[in-house]
Structures are given as C-alpha cells and as structure tokens.
Amino acid sequence: MKNPIHPAAASSQAFQIAEIRPIERLFEDDEGRDRLEKALSRYPEKRAALLPMLGYAQERNGWVSDESMEQIAGALDLTPAYVRSVATFYTMYNKHPVGRHFIQVCTCISCHLHEADEVFERFLAETGTRAGEVSEDGKYTVIEAECLGACGFATAVQVNDRYFENVTPDQIPAILDELD
Amino acid sequence: MGYPYSHDLEVNTLLSRHFGDEKARTLEGWKELGGYATLPRALEMEPGAITEVVKESGLRGRGGAGFPTGVKWSFMPQEPTGPHYLCCNADESEPGAFKDREILRWVPHLLIEGCLIAARAIRAEHVYIYVRGEFFPFSRIVTDAVVEAYEAGYVGENILGSGWNCDVTVHIGAGAYIAGEETGLMSSLMGGRAEPWIKPPFPAQAGVFGRPTTVNNVETLAAVPMIVAEGADWYRQWGTEKSPGTKLWCCSGHLVRPGTYELPMGIALKDVIYDVCGGAPNGKKIKAVIPGGSSTAMLTADELDCEGTYEGMAEAGSALGTASPIVMDEDTNIVRAMRRIAQFYAHESCGQCVQCREGTSWTAQLLHRIERGEGSLSDIDTLYHLCEQMTGRTICPLADSVVFPLRSSLDKFRDEYEALIRC
Ligand SMILES: Cc1cc2nc3c(=O)[nH]c(=O)nc-3n(C[C@H](O)[C@H](O)[C@H](O)COP(=O)(O)O)c2cc1C
Ligand code: SF4
Ligand code: FES
Image 1 (cartoon, rainbow over the protein chains, first blue to last red):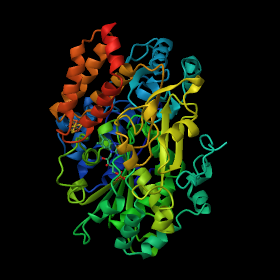
Image 2: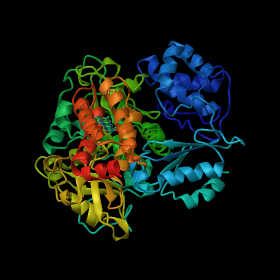
Image 3: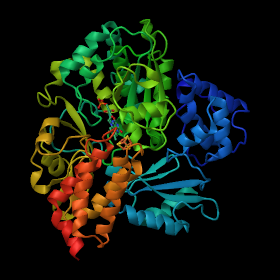
Image 4: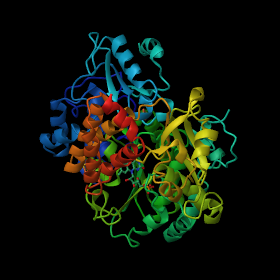
C-alpha cells in the first residue's frame, strides 16, 4: 500500500491531485478498507466519515461518480440519495470528470480589483476550452472560483492542490508549460 | 526584508514572529524556538484557572464577531457527563481574509498547542481542526505537525504523563463558505450539508455530535499559549481596554504592499492602509475601503481616521470583522465591485432561508443590470427594500453580510449608481 497514513491524518488528504489512480470498487482493496477504517476511528458517528470518503473517491478517480456515491452510502449505512444531497452541496467534489490539471481562477472581489477576469479569459484562450470543459487532450479544465483565501496575492489561481499567486495574464503560457 | 514586507511601525510580533521561517514548521525546530513550553504548565492548572486567565486577558474571538473567548469557554459545562469537543475554525473563506492560512502554514505547532490548552480548559477530549478544502498545501502542513505531535506525546493518550487524553483530527472541507459559520461547520463535520441551525441549542449545550462544543477561530487559539504563559496583564499592554492584544490584518485590493501584518489593536485604519501598506499604487487616490472583510460596511477615503478596534470600527459605522481591508482606488467602478461581492453571497447562500436564497441572487442580478446600463432609478429603491428584507430575519447572518456593504455603497456612492442608470 502506498504511503501508510496515520489515523489522525486519514481524513485530511489532498483530494484534487493530478496523479489519479482510478479504481472501480472503492472499498474492496486494502488501501480503501484502511482509509475507511481509519476515518471511522476519528469520529463518534459513522456519518462523519462521509466527507473524508467523498474526498477519497475523488483522490482516486478525479471525480465522484454515482457508483462511488452508492459504494460510500453502503459503507456508511446511508442512502445514496443522502450521499448525493451532500456531495452536490459542496463545490469541490467534481460531479463530472475534469482535466488532469484542474485550474481554478479566483475572480472574487480582491482578485477582481486586479486582473482576475483577464487571467481567467487568458487561461481559457491558452487551453482552448470554454469554462468547465475538458480540453481535447484531457489535460485542462478551467473554472472561475470564489475567494481562495489568498486575496493579498491577487490574482490567485489554484491548480489541483497547488496555489499560484500574483498571477498576471502574461505569465499564463509559462504556468501551463510548468504544469506539463 | 521581513515577512511579507517589513514596515516602520514599532510592534512586537507575537503570532507572526516566525512567519517566513521554515524551521518553525517542524516539531524539532519549533521546540528550539521555545514551543510547547506552556502546555506542561497548563496541564498543572485547573481547567477553570486557564479559562480565568483568558477571560482576564480580554482576548476576543478573531473569527469576526469578537466575542470574549474566556466567557465563551465558561459556558461549557463544568462537570462533563460525556465527551466535550473543540472545533478549530480554519475555514477562512471571507473574501479579503487570508490571515489564518499564515498561521496554518508557518506555525502549525503554535496552533496545536493553543488547541490543546483550550481543550484542557473546556475539558474536551477531541479537537477537530476544520480546514477549508482549498487549503490543501496548508492542511498538509498542519496534518504533518499533528502526526509529529502524536509521536512526541503532546497529543493522544496520557499527554506528557498527565493522565489526560486528547485527540486532534484535521478535517478538510470541500468548498462551502457557509461551513465557516459555527453551526454550519458542525453540520458539515457531522457529514451533512453545511447548513446552519437556529440557536438554541447553543454549541456549548449541544454542538457537534449533540455534545457540548466550543468553536474558535485559528487566530484566537494561536493567541492562547502566550496568554497562559505570560499572563493577562502582559497581553493587555497592547490594544485598548475593550480590545486588548495584537491582531493580524490582511490587506488586499489596490495597495502598494498588500499582505498580512500583525499590529497592536487600536492602530488607526488609515495608518494600516497608508503607512503599513503604502496606500494605492501608481500615486492614485483611494476611493473606498471595506475594512473588515467583504461583509462589512464600506468607508469612503474621508472616513479612514478611525480606531482599529471592535468598538472603534463600530463607532465609524462599520466593523472590524476579520480586520481584512479591501482597498479600492479612484478608478474603481463601485457598482461593478458591489456586484462581484453580491455574486459571492448568492453563490454561497446555503438556501435554507427565502430572504437569503432569493435576496442574494436578486441583489446580484439587479446590480448586474445597473452595471450594464440597463437599470432604472426604481432599482435603487428595490435594492434598499431588499436590504430591509434581508436584515435580521434569517437563520444565520449571511444575508445580513451582503446588506452591510450594499447599503453603505448605496448611501455613499449613490451618484455612481445614478450615473450608470442615466447613461
Ligand atoms: C457566514 C459566516 C461565515 C463565517 N466564516 C468564518 C470563518 O471562515 N472562520 C471563522 O473563524 N469564523 C467564521 N465565522 C464566525 C463563526 O461563526 C464563529 O463565530 C467563530 O468561528 C467563532 O470563533 P471565535 O470566537 O474565536 O471568533 C463565520 C460566520 C458567518 C455568519
Ligand atoms: S441566512 Fe442564508 S446561509 Fe444562513 S442559513 Fe439562511 S439561507 Fe443559509
Ligand atoms: S478574492 Fe481572490 S483569493 Fe480572495
């Protein structure tokens, strides 16, 4: 199993990463069982492991499919409808596959006061996509995001689990090169 | 050059002393810098005595509302009849705020020590550090620190031989501003949608998992070790009677030196903006400032000579909030900026209350219409009417949050709205 995880850290793994390791049945291998068991050990109620497990599904597959939601529901004694109602509440769980580099451009107020809109447009142009679309080569998806908590370093951009700060439109080709 | 820029004002940096110092992140480095010296002392104190020191220090919650921390702790039952919980609120998502992330990423062990001392004071057996999902790089740093602290015996069973057990778990969110509201946070932590609930029950009565719970902000908890170590009077040498201590200010928008700065409470807002941050770039004039994060009332350039304390900012007609001034220079289109803020709240409303769900999106749409030059004068009256409808009628204060900047922008920059309508 890759990287044994301390129980205290089981619920806090980065789940938007480029190196996905797709899996169909989430809890039928050692890694999945281990993550589930460790997450469950951190809360007095089973249901509380829901966000960590949605995160695990996305960490493995890059998004959270209906099948993943059903498997998580089964593992936590919840209904699939309930799991769906939670998964769709949170913006960070992808309900559709996304590009390997998931690019979120903050266009909220502090970034908006700088060049956020131009940065966003330039990312779309350079990747040849429309907002939310996966590029033909599967590499990129670009979306607008609300405040990323980096307002003093506008424009803030997040690519998977990384921050890029003080981004200006002319830096974008270099950023895309760096991602490859 | 200091972190992130140095400035000329004389201040003792308490929380931010080690910002920018990689060494402070590891347990070994942190101990060399004097870390984890207060925890053993706190373990020898009665929980009530810890609460008393914090109460006397006058520390007020840094999550925005400024509620006295020691008083909040004293609401917790004195004789536990089952588990108590501490939730550390690291959801930081208010537009303009980016201070907690600096604590998370530079001094994670300071936060952990603060969490443990607070947990001891409220007799909690488990601390959940709820970090917003987007903060992956920073939650990873905190997680590594928690694991190190477990391995060194500062967290877990029989902490430092005291017989006291306390776990710490990092829990990461998934993109919902409303998970920062304390009851929303607890709903989310329990595996639900981050929907706030009506109080009562208050968290200290029945919080997360139905048990007595205290929710505190990252910056609040990080201030606890030094207060317990040095005493209430020491902490009170900074700030005012009602707002003691130092505060992290995070300054963004049109500024020469944006960033997070630790400053004594009571500094004038204009000094933060002009002296510390260098005013607006390119010699431009400042038009407006939203002083406490996007949910506080706008001030004009003539209104910045106010005291940076909870009481001082309230007197100036706004709020200290998270001390996150968003600065707009003379070229800023106020209607457009306000529309962008309203769009944030429309996106983040959890949808439980009609006034908020409908009100935030109508507001955003009306502002958009005016911005495009398609508005009418009656739209301004409608916006005022919406402000009325959205104030004090909802489960949580998110609806009110959009009213503060909106109403103040209508009052103070009405000419800009009218100019767009008439053009
Ligand atoms: C809509 C909304 C969002 C909030 N977001 C945060 C947040 O991101 N971080 C935070 O610490 N407090 C936030 N708060 C305040 C919390 O409800 C709570 O008062 C705070 O965490 C208590 O900690 P303190 O007493 O240490 O300030 C928010 C409140 C509201 C109404
Ligand atoms: S005021 Fe808005 S965010 Fe708060 S509970 Fe009501 S709908 Fe949800
Ligand atoms: S407004 Fe862009 S990071 Fe906060």
